[in-house]
Structures are given as structure tokens and as C-alpha cells.
Length: 622
Image (cartoon, rainbow, N blue to C red; front, top):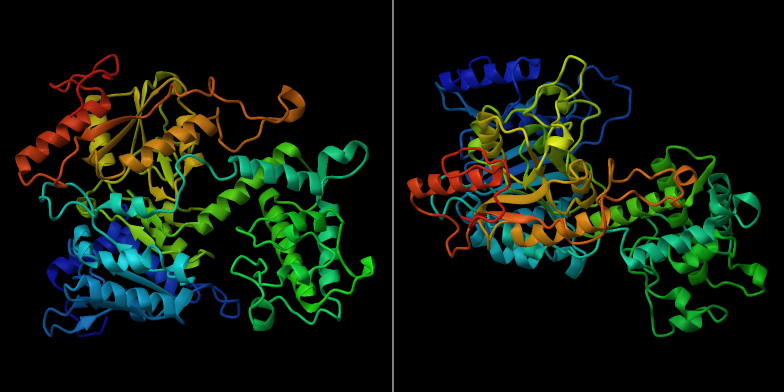
């Protein structure tokens, strides 16, 4: 701050609280977590780091919207004004901690269509060099920019390959403020999400077939090792592919600077078919040059890695297009091998069928995440919001990010995170269950373990997203309820099937309930219901959802141990407001009564707030 800067008394108190937060004596609130994320992104090096060391990944940060300097709900205060001269000061734009990028904060007029459109174009043009954010004053103000959402944000990459990392901050939450200041219309976003509710990445018939084909192509061919993939042998095959692709006759180099090579391939690395595509490979099956629809290994790459490398050894001289194809295949094979090494955390030894299945599910999930058209989150902790912003700036697949940001949680004291949840080793959590890392409402024991309800006592699991969690948690604590578990779904799209199943698997006999504040025909129910049922049906397992059972000891050939049979007996049930035309009531009294009723039903309380011994599955739903 300039030496003559005089802070307003309220601002001075705010700054003192933030100092206590970063010292660890006070929980970090929402506004501070956001500014911490921005500050870590613009700095080239953190304080105390070696000035000769390689700089960290950094970017400019641009935030625009309606009253974003202060924050509509008086929580941000990214720009402070001198109480004597009214001179603005943006502290993060000049922290004095070494080299840094710009942090630009711009208040914009109430012209959502124009401003969101401009920020979308800015994000496309700047790419990953800038984190661009636009905030609506209330979530439903974005209704006026629905044309930009439909034509560009949700579909731009699919239609034109136009990638944007725009972040939309849409305040959302039912606080009794009426129908025009409550809902960011999440149902519209979820309806536009490119996500199949009936299949899981890595577990569809196509993915299972692909897993079996890759294992068959890469496994050893004889002896006792024929049921394993040798990582050493895999490395040798990849190196052989690279050597073959580096022949002098190729003349192509696989990098972003070689436009001549990449004009032959689509964004997934597959050959672009022409009228004479089949004649280009006279000695090959036309199926081997078909256009690939994903980034996984294609059939011809399976042959390449298994040792069947088409080259001049066949007596047919390969033309430049063929050689360029080999170069791209070699590059993709190297990428896959590096991914295998990272997944198994080793580059030697053997991999059996069960472990390879795990890896291919991981690969399919990664591809599904990279193929989504946007990411939608509804975080409930400041730390998760902090990590979501940093993840958006560092993720390799640039996608728009929609944040259903809270309102009353911005100043809700239980909505705070410990400083340790921001440090090294911490990350974004797509799902948070009771006692999980990231759960900011439980006490940590002296041993470092977190409190978690005993699984055998839980008769109901209530899933929810957003600020309704704190209403459920407050009522559960006040009533002393110990047989209901709460699970927060922090990311809605792409849907975290495995992470959710892992939490539900802790309570195999519990009833499943989805609770939301929004009316039944709005909010998340229509999107969540089939996906929860699919996750329960497909991957609900005892313990960790991606932990393989030892195939050599249990006699089940490396399959997972499922809870019960694969039937539809564990269907999720809805608890919330009934279907309505208006997003919310205009009466605070009616709003309070509706909220009380849905909280009581979700937790199994009667109309007087008395805890029932059995679930109320047959009562009329409010």
C-alpha cells in the first residue's frame, strides 16, 4: 500500500482477519481463498525460492463482472479505496514479491450478453496465458447472456475447435431472496453437458473390448509371462517405433511447429481422410487408416506395439504420409508409455490383467474428462474453490469452468478451511464424505485421524451439493443424529462416478437419498439420478473403488468384490421441493418452512423434529 493510504475501519478489520488466516490462527474464508489462488497464479516464484531455479507455471488473471472489485456480497475487496483520497489500490497486482504477471479487476455494466461475449473471446485469444473470469451479480443474471452460452461457451470447441478456459462465477443458493435472485439455473447447464448417464468411462462394452485388445497386443507371447505385460519390453517397443519414425526418408518431425505434418491429422492425431485415402496405403487394410474418434491406441497402434511394424522391411516404400503417420503413432505410443509409468509409478517389472484393467479405466476416464464440453462445480469449502481455480489454470485440457458460487456461505463462519488444506499435497476433491480429507466440519484427533461415523450404524446416506449441506449438517449436529451420513458432490460435470461410489461403498446397507433446495424439475435431480444409479449398479465396491483384489489369492481372476448382486435394489430417492414453475417463492416465511421440511425429511425427522428410528420412505414428499 502507498504510505499515505488510509483504510476504512471495516477494511482495516478485514485485513487484520486475513492476516490471522494466513498465520493459521483463523479459518480461511471464501474471499481470502480466492485471492490466495490469484496471488499464487501470478507469481513466477514463491517467496524464498531460489532465484536461479526454473519459474513456476504462471499466468495473468483477469476478473470482470458486476461489482467484482468489492464483491456483490462484500466478500472480495480485491481493490481497496483510500478513505481520504478515494484512490484505488490493487494489492495483488503489485505484491513486491518478485516477478509476477498482471492481476486485472474490472467492474462492468449490467450488459451480460456483451461482457460475457467479450470475455469469452478474450479467453480464446489469450489461451492458457491468462485466467479469464466473469462474475454475475446473481446467477440468474446470466439469463441475459444465454445466447453466448449456447452458441459459444457450451459448443464452441465441438463446432469449431475453438477452445476457451473462461471461468463463469454464478452466485447460486436459496436464501429467501425470491425467484429472481436464487437460481443460476444449473439444470440448463447440466442439460447441455456432453455426458452419457447410462455408461461409465472404462466400463462400457467398447472400453472393455479395447482393454482386452490392448492387453492381448502388449502381453508377452510365450512362457509363464504370457499373462503379463512387461514394462521393460513395452519400453523397447516404443523405442523401436521412435527409431522407425526417425528415418531420414520421413522428413517429418512431430512437434507443434511443424505445420506440414499436422495438417495431415485431426485434433486427436488421426489421419484426415481424403478421396484417395484408401489408395495411399495399397498394402494395408483400409480399416487401419480410418479416422479415430478418441486419443486411445487404435487397432493399428496395437499391431505396432505388438511388433508388427509396417516399414520398408515389407518391400514397399512408404510415402511421406505413411511415414508421418508412423511418427504420430510413435509420439502417441510414447505418450501412452509415459502415462503407464506415471500410473504404476515404476518403469520396470510386470503388469497383470487386473492392473491393466485399472490403468485402462483410468485412461478412459482421463479421455472422458478431456472430451467434456465444460466443467461445472458447486464447491462448499474455500479450499476446494482455491484448488478449482488453480486446476483451471494448470489443466492440460482447456475447458470452460462454471462455478455455482455461494452467497450466504461467503460470511458463514463454519464455511472455512484450515490453512493446511491449501498447502503441498492438497488438491481439489470432486466428492467429500464424512471424515474425508477436505471435510471442514469434523475435528481431527490428536493422532491426525479424522472422525468418521461407524459404517454399521449408518442407515441412510444423504447426497447433496452446494450450501444445503451446511443446513443438513447443522440440523444433524443439533439433533444428535449419528445414523445418517452426508456426502457432498462438489463436481457435477464430468460426473465423478468412481469417487461417489467409493463413499457409498462404505455403507452397503444404507438407504440412498438425494437432497436439494431447488424444485424437483430444476436443479440437479434429473441429471444426478441416472448417474448415481449407474454408479451403484456398475462399480459399487467394498472399500476403495479402484483397488483391485489380488487375483492370485481370492480365486476371482482379479475381479472386484461387489456389494450384493448387480440389481436395481439400491435406487436413489429424491428429497426436496416439489416441481414448480418459479425457481423459488417470494415469501421468506414460506421459504423457511420449505427448507425446514426438506431438511427434516432428508434426516429422517418427523414434523416436530423428532428423530425417527426407521427411514421415512413412505411419507408424502414435500
